[in-house]
Length: 503
Image 1 (spheres, rainbow, N blue to C red):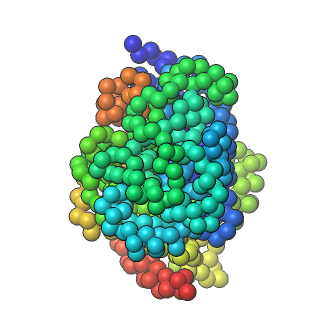
Image 2 (image 1 turned 120 degrees about the horizontal axis):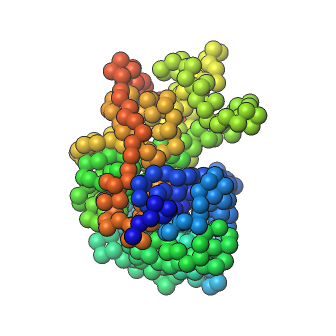
Image 3 (image 1 turned 120 degrees about the vertical axis):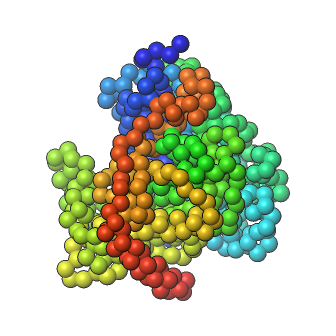
């Protein structure tokens, strides 16, 4: 029997921080949410690493914030996890981290990817449905094999971001099959680890975790975790899955031909399908709903670009936000709104960490072009927003080339909450887009927690019962035409600069 007080908790480990969402099991309404950022270390050009211990600390702080904001944590009935994928947490025999975790944005394994393409490309694509790029766990582990072999020798267990934290919460080590698809050594057809591809990675096959389904109950909150998290001991913990899969699901994309445009740390254009559509230019994953798939065209840096600009150039706005209590991004948006369409000629390419779709070029770097003596901070911020939108439109070209039809578009991610950026997206794509509420991974995980704990009979029922929408953004025909012209300029600048970065 579902009570009005029953709460479901979704716990998301994104690339930049941990987000918690508390949801009413009866209405699906968001009761409270909080997020805590954690640090990413960029020790060398192209590197991207995080300390595993930071995730658990951030989670506990975020849960405490949710409780402090009025949510009665004693009424939480189930929790589920999600996280950015590809990120292997290497653990010793006592489940202690061997080293920092190489993140999916890391670009150091270019040499290993070239070796895989030259020697194992077809085998990998046939087995794992993807092409070797530095995003994947396989070349990351090969880099360690070549450069830090002692790390792999010490590794007795392998988990992934959400799975490691869930292990700390339950004492149970496992992962789900969608998360496993992010490694490049998972057999897609047979839903199991591929011994041949695991051998290439240098990992011990026996170190890999048991595979379960996203909605499976995998354990309960231990007494130690209960004290740390402020949650009741013994409540069920549902496995969960990758952030991309669960946010597509939680945003309402539960039918073939639904499309997600994501403005989060990274940016995605994901199209749902009734069967796998493999392509060397996109990523292919299983959907949360059994039997469905989705194709992904992805840019490495989306909202990450605005966070980078905030930290590097918006000290005045950060100080004012601290003094007034306003959100710093609201102040930043206000500057961008003063700049006209086209940002007075300034253009931005968001390749802060190389690029995935459609170029798959780790050597690409960001640039501001068209800067003049009259350019101001607002022009730079608006150009940044437009550049990310152009990059997503570039990704969408891969979907168009595959001939995948699009029926409905959902706009999600932290960037979608801003009025200006969501309008820019609608105009660059020249398509209307529904903005899901709240439209993020932690909400989708909360719904999965409800499915796993028996509050809803199926994942689809949970979405249809609970999901709400904030607004629908319509394109402006005149502005869309301007952006169509600017998009061609954007691609021309990429084509001109790409060979320079190669050198």
